[in-house]
Figure 1 (cartoon, rainbow, N blue to C red):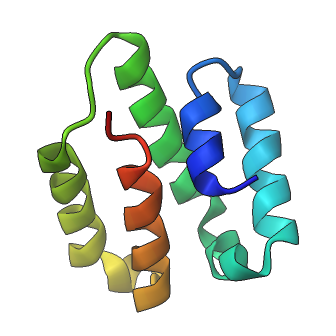
Figure 2 (figure 1 turned 90 degrees about the vertical axis):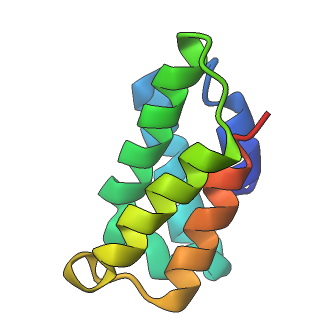
Length: 97
């Protein structure tokens, strides 16, 4: 199960179950090991998008670009590398309807 599958199923999951799935994915999948340090950031992004989807607000490419801009702008304070930003962009793009 990848981040895109979690993103698609996040609308139906509780916050606790979503946290478990993300934690398991970050621990077991070697391609996402770099996001282990920023687990809270990933969980917060998914929960924000999950709330939008539950309210009926579709995720647009403009929303994704805006969020990616803020992540890129604060990448040094957050400790994000280029591969982290690419993984997060893929995650946010999987929410786009």
